[in-house]
Image (cartoon, rainbow, N blue to C red):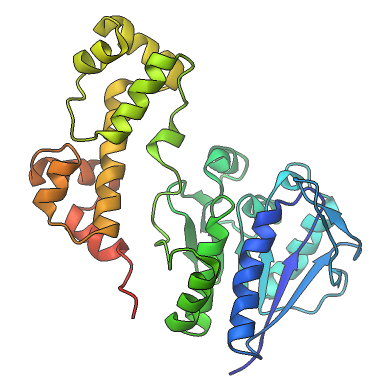
Length: 319
């Protein structure tokens, strides 16, 4: 089996977990199967960098003159907001020469700035998807998945999703058993499907400032099959339905109905991905009442029925 070189780019303001998460996965693969990966870290000048959390990372060397690796991994972090132009130019020059180009979190912003994502599907941290799309209209930004593969380029969403993508790449390079062994060692799932949502309904909406409304948000999340009409939720918040609906939208950025729809859809998706329950059982547990109501919700939001969603995105059973 040929050894694959992996080069991980470092820069000031990098998110430490964007670096260490994938690094632990690929190092684990090399320890499990020696000779699999040759892993190097490099900064522009070869000097130490300071992460966004204050850690100092010492690279193996400089990017200047670095021969083309098999896999080039670009992490994200605060340093991607105003990147060194030399780094963007280095990526523009060397990015097209690698066999596999990978980004974590806002590392995709650097790839886009270097013109490496033009005409391609990509993702990034959910909070930066809109900005990536605005600043780089030639990139087809997909805000939903935790990672996206488009040819030899793979981009992942925020922070820990880099671990999911790294596990997927190890499984591709070696096999599932190796990836599973690494996942067990790191105490993570093997593995969240790439098209799994990168953020929850609760994260998509703002958290209300007032305690009665925050309590309603918690109640919705814990009781998706309960009575979640505006009238019922307003009574729980001790507000009139009209006052409740207005206050909820002002403080969360969405209407009560839309928030309930997101929570129920998220709950159903998790049950389809993580359990073997029947469609009728899941539809009741998620507050849809009937399989047909759940089917319509899935088609409207995801463009696929629940049965097909389960077939695509439920991880294969471990052996």
